[in-house]
Image (tube, rainbow, N blue to C red; front, side, top):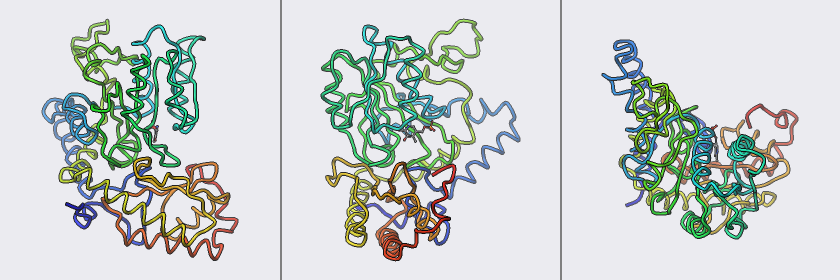
Length: 397
Ligand SMILES: *Cc1c(COP(=O)(O)O)cnc(C)c1O
């Protein structure tokens, strides 16, 4: 059954005159979010601190984590929400590296998101001079997994190009070589079907404000394979991951299973927004979503290539090798993107030269794709981007 685009689009607030191709960076607001957040504010007003028990605030990271788990192929009790993705990357890496004590190398690829690489570098510095982060080209990851590698840390879908790794193959290769593997699903969760448990992943992390639409600063998630959940030692040993937080024991004892991956007080208002956003997913089949995403991407690629010969596709053409975004390179990519945004087509720019477009079938259909192609074609044909004001860099690109 195809995705009911008319029904899902109606669930989002999308400003008039905007074609939003940046839901891979910050998803739009679900119309139900303000009322759900208002309810949380009301609980705060009326219940005060009693809200932690009476309104179930304390269990929200697990409750919401189970719902995110359904979207990434995890069972209930395997995912918990909290913190930001950078923190969860650190936590997964630090736990994993401790489980492989004779090895000193974290392996990643040069296409990974810088924050993931920075967190790995910081962890290596903390652990000592023998530890190091090794990065290789994305195509070389499989061959680079050898017996020196403690943990492989890979983002499934490349944030710039949209190139996708094979989770099952790389996880198998890592295990064969005695390494653990931690997946970053930032551009996968809500973008395509993920089978985190079946893929063999040891750890997985991701964010909720991209394809899952929880709003700016929405909490991240972490998945721990059940075989590790009661043994992994969380390096960030905060009180809410303690076995008995309200015993106020001066010594840390990790909680049972995924609970130990909690750190501190959960962001209740953001979790409320995420709960509303997850309602949108209740009736959605991820394979239908994937079919729609590939159809839209193919349509966008064909249209842009026909109308804009100066733009070079950097996203793989093969369906299994890409996520749910399309990227083109052009030396004036920044100015072109600013000209597009001025005309209401919102994508984003990623240094050094990439125009990036997120394809999100919950609220983007063929008409939006055709509209975006037409405006991009006109901007390229008339060189409307070639103006000083479009070259001035903003703080956030
Ligand atoms: C978006 C993204 C992040 C962002 O991390 P935050 O801590 O949420 O700011 C990290 N890693 C990857 C791969 C991302 O795509």
